[in-house]
Image (cartoon, rainbow, N blue to C red; front, side, top):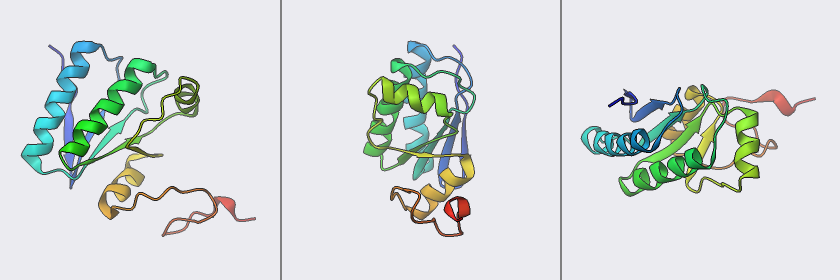
Length: 136
C-alpha cells in the first residue's frame, strides 16, 4: 500500500500531500501520523497542500480528523500552501476546519508552531518581523 511520507523538521512533522487521497490512504496517514507524533514528541503537524488544485469535502473532513487526533496527542495542526481557489471551495462547502491553523508557506507554519502564537492575523497588525503589505 502507498504511504504519504512524514518528515521531521525540528519540533514539527511535515506531511506534503501531492496526490488525491482515497479512504485507505487517509486512514494510513492518520495512523502513521499519530504514531510519529508520539514517537518524536512533535509539538506540531504541518500539512502542505500546495500541490492540490482541488480540495473536496472528503479532504476537508480528513484534515479535520488529523487536527483532532493531533490535538489529543498535544500537537497543533497547521495547513500550509493553500491556494486561493482551495480556500474558496472550503468556504463554499461550509468546512471551517476547526482547530486547524493556516499559513501561507512552510516557513510561516514553522514560526507558528515554534512560537506557540496562534492569534489571527487580520491585516491591521503586522506580525513580528514586519509585513508591510498594508502600508501605503
